[in-house]
Image (cartoon, rainbow, N blue to C red; front, side, top):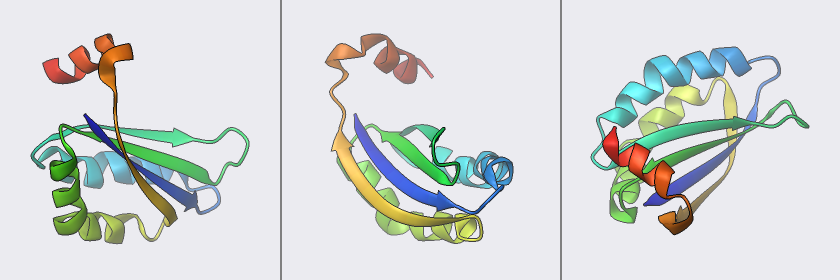
Length: 107
């Protein structure tokens, strides 16, 4: 499994709108991508404007294909709500989270 972490600076008081946008416009696009597993938006309790969106993929190659071919379109959708600060990619070791991996593969 592979994860992409996108850190955003969310515009003030736009969290609900941002989630609605992710749910209605971004998630349908991502669900059509080969290898996409799940999207996890994480909001900071300390800094209301900070959000990290984690996307989980079957492989690094599938995540990179999304980054090159589709992410520019997704970025244009979220741009009015958030400014991307950083993008990081990680291999996910599922040996400690077997239930989570099983749930994702069953979906």
